[in-house]
Length: 298
Ligand SMILES: [Zn+2]
Image (cartoon, rainbow, N blue to C red; front, side):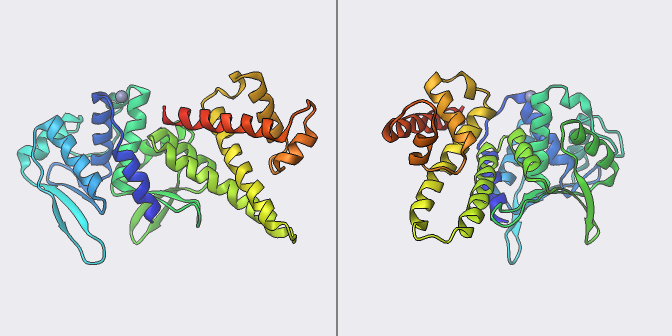
């Protein structure tokens, strides 16, 4: 799942306030290979994730981590604490005495921290399929004692994970592409969410275009590509809640595109109730794309 690698790289570039960094660290610990008084074992195939984890442990617990790497097909990075002083320091900090059998909501009082917690969970134990192939986001859960708390927390946010098991491990998964987009947005992987959205629109359009047996296929593709970009830009503006507050001429261009998602520019000009030239309309869409690109960076 190389798409996962990209998503995790995007997440590892995020900067965040201390409260969220701690919550993210908590999510990584709870969903690590093992998290308990006798041993804390964090494993990942993603080097950036491993370094991020080590940095958090240094920051909050002043414990230095030794990263071991190994593995045949894929390199595996591993950090293990067996020293009881170290494990006790970390485990008790999050409010556990012996069993790790609940999620400590004291750490997750702020909304930003809940999102950061989920980011940590995904970094430690999540995978997401390449949207070109499938829509599936899954989290592997090593500690079944926290399953109920985790599912409740996710359900409250609108992420109704389903449960399956694979070779003895519990897998929590989402299959609805809209929910996956939303989950990735919430944990901070907005670029990945937009890629899924675009691939969906593109697949949809490709299917329609494939049905058209026409000499002008090339031209249609060109129009479709432009239309996809415009629709993706409009979706970004809508998600940011600013689509309706743009200049009136842009708002009317957005309305026109939404009512005619696949029409070429020439067709749009013909359909438009106000008289407009092709280059005039093209100019408006260019502005819309620019604004969306700019806002998407915020
Ligand atoms: Zn926070």
